[in-house]
Length: 461
Image 1 (tube, helix red, strand yellow):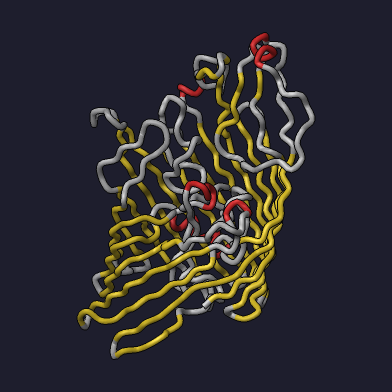
Image 2: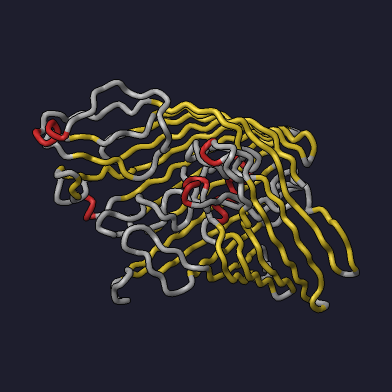
């Protein structure tokens, strides 16, 4: 069975375009054959389930007011949610701020919420047909539909519309493979596979925006960068000595700020190596992947351009009951959560792309029918020179709102810790319990901490 990952639209924010795994998750059921017609096969795969999810978190930090009356807006990252317990402090007036009589920040309150929701991989239904083209080449057509169990904005009158996450035709033979259609991106693919395989493939992890609907993030945004889905053309080489290369071009994406024009498809690639078996069950899997996207300003000459680019790398090692994954990524304009995310963190107020990196470790111990997992990861943002001038360090040149100077406190890092256990009742029935602690920090000292506890059941076929 194919397990695929996360993604969504702007109102889903954090559940967006992040994930997907084309690898097998332990104990997942194989695709189910529905019918044969000569050499042709009709098959299906999918999953269904739900999770009870509890969140308690600090409220998103309020803007800081400095001694001169300027506001400092907390910018990018963090958990955006309504506070269930708010401060009774008196809001500052414009005259107070203008006079420079205050320098503190209003308390942010807390967020506490419990929901029944989808997990990192939502309810999915995949349908495919495959058969021969020649004696040496086969063709497969595949469509995968995602749906959520929870309502948008906690309003059960809202329709849960289906999301056609994948749809492609794929040719395969001794010469390799050629895929045309909508599928996973290649950049950051191995990075997100680590989290799916060893920690959150049957769970929830970090939920992102607690009042939205759609797939959760797992460890995405905390050292793990989601690969996402896009229209593309991908060639996969034959496996030679354990090595395999995938290269492709994908529908371009624009970024935040001024970089909203594109011209050319986006190249991506991934090189993988899988070792021969170590003992009866052991193996080592290595990967490195990359992306490059040229961006242009609207209504400007082509000479006004910039490039978003990145590299990802990592490994998975399995020896006996032990599983260990490590991954990293580094690049310019990448975003916090998924590759080439439209993000405030990725672009400065002067429209310069920021450098971002991330590192993650995932581990799992297989104890019969129970998998016990632990993970850690961190994503960091690096400021540009324009972020530092002309004010104090880490302050951006201000804009003006209501006559008061306004500056920006940029997200510095997001760090996450995960624990979980999955009981595989049968190869197709899985019960999950997982915990997540998210730490957010901004350059001027603001912090936010969120605690999450999730449990649910998943049926796969």
